[in-house]
Amino acid sequence: MSDVKKSPWIMHYDGTSCNGCDIEVLACLTPLYDVERFGVINTGNPKHADILLITGAVNDQNKDVVKQLYEQMTEPKVVCAIGICACNGGVFKDCYNILGGVDKVIPVDIYVPGCAARPESIIDGVVKSLDLLEEKSKKLREANNK
Image 1 (cartoon, one colour):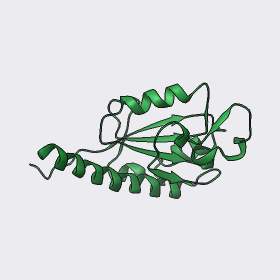
Image 2 (cartoon, one colour):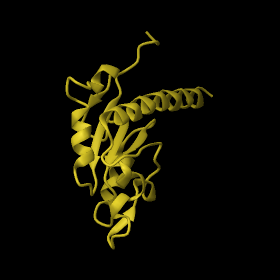
Image 3 (tube, helix red, strand yellow):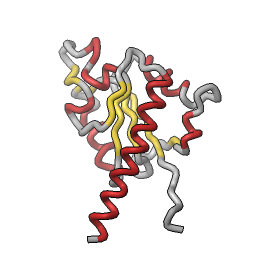
């Protein structure tokens, strides 16, 4: 039974995006791309989530929400920044209210650039997140066994 793995749960949070990347994230759920074939399940609860997909830049109004979502996730966890705005602020980075990319507030593990990020790129980021989650999970088990 120890070889049985649970399906990783993904939570998507839209920061201050134009919704271009959000539409592409939703496209990943359609039968054409079917990201769920990799065993991931969507959730709206950060306490259940293993992977946090974030679109859009971080500003003063949503930085506390982003921190709270991250802190509510249990270890091991992976953060994947989707789109150039989530990576570094994108075209909005010089706006007075934009702090920058998601990594200005929480640690980011995987960056998926693009404006808007293509579904194939997003799925690639999810697959890399799955590999990283497995690696972090293994390290956590080893640390707990010592």
